[in-house]
Length: 394
Image 1 (tube, rainbow, N blue to C red):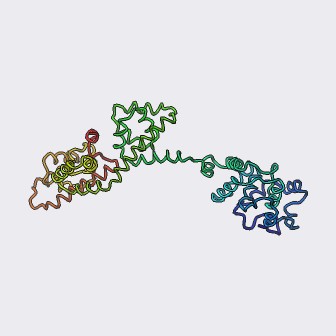
Image 2: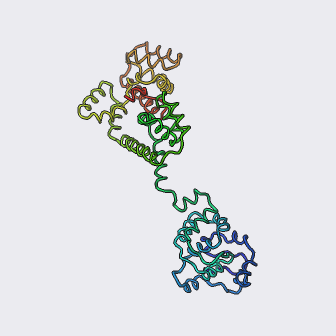
Image 3: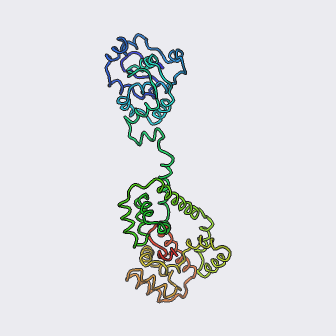
């Protein structure tokens, strides 16, 4: 590497990517400082007289392992000291910083005379102290001077595997069904529940809290508000339990077979589904437990909480509701009609009073399927409950 001749600009030709910008450095000191320190030769004199040694000569004269271009950039940066070097960091790209850090952490000791040659080659830089030792710690100190703690940790790889793992636990947990999580948490001690809620993303934590038994919510909130630092061992035990919960969720979520069978059964009549589930239970009770929660038939609307039923039929067109109710029991009709507005109810009752003659059974099945699919969609997004909490817990 050679310095460009013919001016005081002082920029480096190609290795600008190592120091990014010498113009930012030139503003920090005057040529007289260099003249005083290096025998009256300023950077301009050095360039004009050709007194600067090029890198090939420097490498040839080195008594130990030759320095790479990145090593030289790291050495000069280290020689500047924390205040100035810290200000310079903003002129580097992320990849340049990482390269310099890697070089600095493995940089060999540099004798004072070597350092003086390097400083001269970089023209406007000057050194503090004699030689460079303990370069790994020095580069950390420089980074801490000019960057935020998070940026330093990221560049130096200080973020431990445990921190990443800990974050992933709580991030993954929020992808679960709040009802499912609350069922498992309700078996835990209130203090354990409070800790887990405090670690959850706030939006998901609120959903889980509302699914917990109302009688214990105030106590859990009080424990969460007044929670002190949790002992590492206790936190590790709780997080192990959460991991087990995540594995169970993943196992159920990844059970493609049970999902597919449930989708098939959701297309059937209730009597056919009941027959199939009874036959399956005689073979495997566990299989029934995996499939049954995923099944939602039109007749299951009777089991829905009234609030959820109102929310469901609020989004469904009147003609679909009318068609779905044709051929249904009086109990089903009353349950659905009680969930809609008075005006719409009168219109549907009027249509149903004309009887079902000439109605294609397939049209009825399609309408009912539309209702159940909408119910499943709303339940998946947490907007409604398909069954009361007591029935789910049972």
